[in-house]
Every structure is written in C-alpha cells, then in structure tokens.
Amino acid sequence: MIVKLDKPKVLSDAISIISEVVSEVRIKLLEDGMSIVAVDPANVAMVIFKLPKQTFSQYETGNETWGVNLGDLKNVLRRASGSSSLVFEQEENQLKITIYDKIKRIFNMSLIEIESEDKREPELTFSCKVEMNAVNFTQAIEDCAIVADSCSFVAGEGFFVIEGQGSLNSARAEFSGDEAKFSGIGKSRYSLEYLMKFVKAAKISEKVIVNFSDDYPLRLDFPGDAMGLGFVLAPRVEND
Image 1 (cartoon, helix red, strand yellow):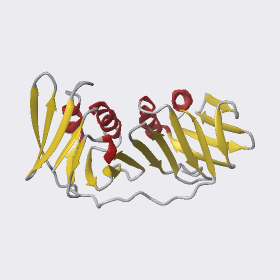
Image 2: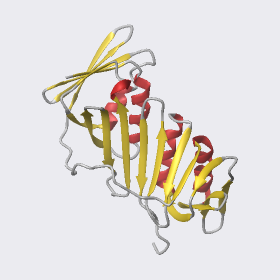
Image 3: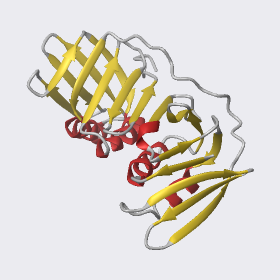
C-alpha cells in the first residue's frame, strides 16, 4: 500500500489536536479515506476524524489499520513543512513515512497493538443544534474555564448561552440569531477540561456545529475544507 499527501499540515494539525485526548489510536485506511474513532482512557470523550480519499494525491490501500502512538506520529509530522509531500507505506510491522522537500527524509515507526476494543461512531439524536463561529465559541469556553470546571449549554427561543458557575465567580456568553444559527430548547452541562482540548480545533475550521440535549452527550463538529474533526462528550449531571 502507498498513501501520498501533498498538504501535510491538514493531517499534522488534526493529529496534534487528537493527541490531546487520546495517546494511541487505530488509523484505518478505508475505501473512502483515512478514519480515526477513539475513546479517551476515562471513557468520557470520543474523537472522530475523517480525511477523505480525495484529499490524497495517491491513495492505494487494502483496508489497512495502523496502531500508532500519536505522540510519536505528531513529532514526525511536525518535521514536514507546508511545501512538503508525505508518503506513507506499511512494511510489515513498520510504518514508513517519507518527507519529500528539498531533501528526502525517511522515518520508520513501529506499529503497535491497541488493547482497547474497536470503536464505532455512535448514533445520537439531539434536540438542540447550534452553528456558529469557532473563535467566538472558543472564547466563551475559555471565559468559563477561568471561573469553573464545567459549563452549561442553554438553548431557548432566540438565544444560546454558555455559562460557567464557580464557588465565587461566574462567566456567561450570550448569543443571538445575529451571531449563531440555532434550533431547539435544552440544557446540559459539560467538563471544561475536555472542552478546552476540543476548541483547539478552531485553528482548522472557521465554524463549529454544536449538538446537545437535556443531560445528554454533546457532539462538536469542526468541518474543514478537506477533512472533518468531531468530538462526543458525556454530560456532567447535576447530582455529580
């Protein structure tokens, strides 16, 4: 098999963000493109990544699966510049990564066995959906992280609110129809520790799509021009 990517920054940025949530993953080379679905060790958050076949300048695979340490892969991908090309080849239990730039550089990474069971993207039904600017969403999450360890998402008729309440202080961001598109009514609370990791995806997407329901998992999607990165997060219930 051989896979070639002429714009490595897309993959490099995504792997850097994913590595904040999970340390080891299965990267699947499917018929329609590269895919990662993984759950963090605490079984609280899921990451979903897809890089379509059309993104690659060469994509010849036989449905391989690579078990990789994301820290190691991230460090290799960082060695590629924006003008580099990347070629991935599997040679037995090794992943050969060749960077083509002014010079040809070759890295060999050992593929690893991932002990956790294979994960699939969950089928979830939500009552609330919000589409908004990713930077504005990030700022609201960062504001709440100053005062609390969790925040609430509240959607109602004509508004969407993100608010954090600490023991002494609070933060609140209010969005109207001018700043976001939203539908549905609901409220749920989520961990800011995880949300602060997720919002780093704002650097690869101008938009975020937020789906949630009352005391129900959250789904965040950061759609890019040539990829998709999403997260699922379990709720923090009021009687924690």
